[in-house]
Image (cartoon, rainbow, N blue to C red; front, side, top):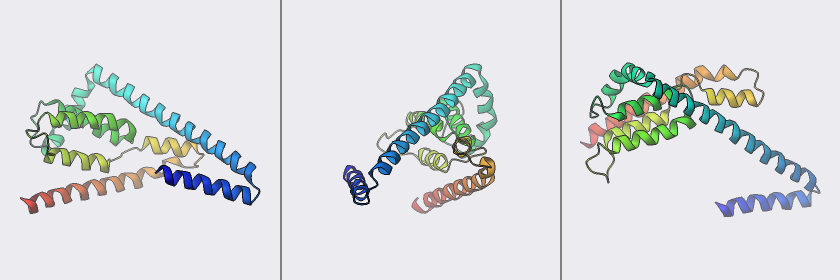
Length: 191
């Protein structure tokens, strides 16, 4: 990867010198660097906000009520998880973070889910069906409101940043249904 970056930068510098556009190259380099830092800080702010909201929800006990609402759905999907296991709560929080389009905030919650699911795994060297199911649903990331994308589009001056809501919802639902269906078919065929 370092070689590719070195080649890209080297070729860019060479072309800017040959075309006598070194000033424009330098200006673009600093603008791109500034933009990358601004986007990173913006995303860091979103993640910090969601993690703070998650902590408040958890401390207030609201997470247990939300867990109860999702328990039937999660229990049907993850049949081998005991009803009162902490994995149910972790999965619920991860699904909620993805539902609101906060994929960056869902990552630490996803790691917690995998740790909880690993505690139920009898063979630590293999992955369980529940782990696979969680990974594909998490990867499909069903989104009701993609806050992060709307925020980025808004930050870059989009005239209608909310236009991505319906296509995102449809795309994520279809990809999740297809992924779960494929996993179940593969499981049946490989038994």
